[in-house]
Image (cartoon, rainbow, N blue to C red):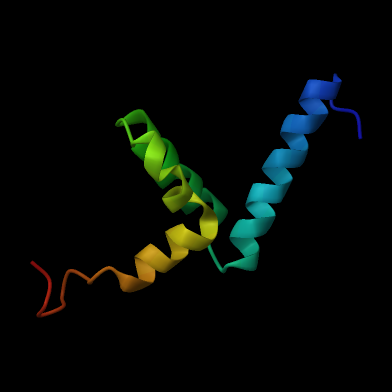
Length: 73
């Protein structure tokens, strides 16, 4: 695969892999990317980057209380 350079091809392959992982975990890639970019810009800690991977991100959404839940604080 050629995307202008070897580095470009590598970045493209990483993007396809990440968005493929989103689809595999039932995550909307655009919603995931928007949320993750916002968190990174806000200073998300490096030690918690694994929480931003699509599978962990999807699990955190499932376990987070919704706004209408009685248990929500």
